[in-house]
Image (cartoon, rainbow, N blue to C red; front, top):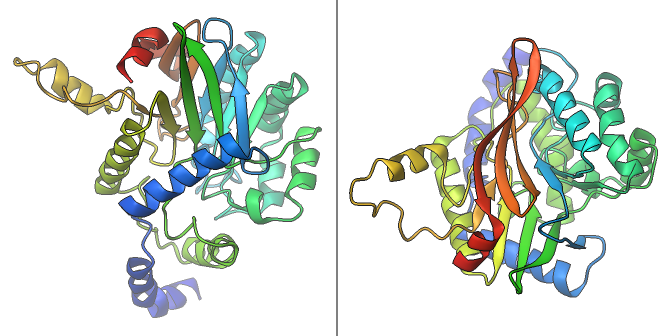
Length: 338
């Protein structure tokens, strides 16, 4: 039946996908990010709020794009679970505040009942942060249900054992060398025509469109799977962030780590440039967490602590989970460059 329906519906769905594309559109992205930032600053509440932080004392770790599933062949999180649990244990003992930056649960391909059944150990580990009032959960496009489901708050309470609301974003606000700095954290799907529209369009995507694509095994053309869209997404996010004052933008969504507005490949290109001019005009305003579902089991994220911001990886070596610092920057120097 699936094969027959796929044959019948493949072309219409691909046509409709091209019409209602998930490719980021510059004007929509800029408008959505600006509106969200203003909402958080001027009218904090359901969308999100400001979290005060002290650069030399506060500790935050940001992970995104786990896509927790039902531990079947389509579950991208399966191999990453041991590294993620090891990382959570480290950050909980070190008293970090955990920010889950969206797409934590894969609700396009699984029911919430399935996800709760197969991720109990992970939810329990995340729940330890909530007990310390140190857990912030932000929704993405693949777990958009946390925004539109009227029973979301009840379900989150059941999962974590305490009150928790899924937000669209938060701003970490502090002072570095007597200069205010804001770190704007959101998933990064803003401006996406498939998942950033009105309530009806969000309901349609979350409950009808995405499950249909998943059942028929038709991959949507999203930044996480398309290199050209990753590049476009990164460029737009950096352009928007570079136009803001005293602001750093941290997103997920693309599954591609970005540090100081450069991907790993771009940093290599800059280091090998004999003129020193490669990417010299790139303002270090945009960061991306990467993801927690790489096919080798590694996970990446962003740390903010001890006056630094770091891109970190957790990997498995000789049977043990190990933390690796990939990049780091002093917040004072970074603030001066904004």
